[in-house]
Image 1 (cartoon, rainbow, N blue to C red):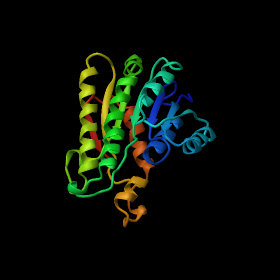
Image 2 (image 1 turned 180 degrees about the vertical axis):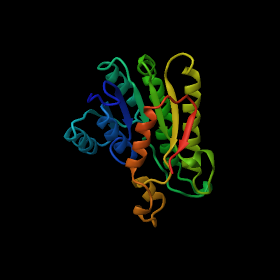
Image 3 (image 1 turned 60 degrees about the vertical axis):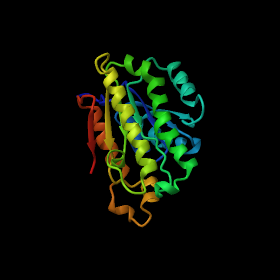
Image 4 (image 1 turned 135 degrees about the vertical axis):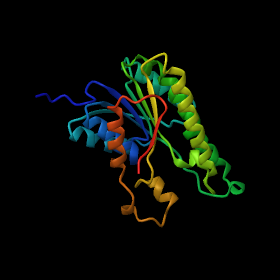
Length: 237
């Protein structure tokens, strides 16, 4: 018998790792043996997740950073490259949800924040970690999207348009690198999930009526052990 875990020896970076799906995914990857780099803005929240990981026997490193800050991602990528030779897994979970309003009443500052977080930071992360991901034996990128990116919905135009751009960046990048390396890219729509973002969007919804973040994390972990092709896309119901 062997005690080897499925992700033993791999390094993973998870954005939005301080709560919700990002936190649950980081914990799941660590339990599976990966060393997880936890990325989010709030130090104390990241430390709480790290404590959970270490208490369960896993390993992790916190990397507090605001992904929308100028050169924030570049500094993060430089720091990671200075410590690790490769990055095996990148999970893009960080996202910003603006207030749901008619397009004509959209708050410009919130829309800008959504574009910076959901689009500009995504491009910076893909570009910044491209060298480390390509060096990995079988690099994997998982991007967390929303159905409103592909299916526009009233009052969701700010978030939906940012997620449409997010999807396009991931799919374009995946197509660019799939014949040049073993790097593969997949997009996951987590569906209705019990998160703070969901609670903001649906304030009257009973939390217990939707699945917990751990269900999404379980599927992400399973997908990372499958031989999927770039372009893979699925919704978790």
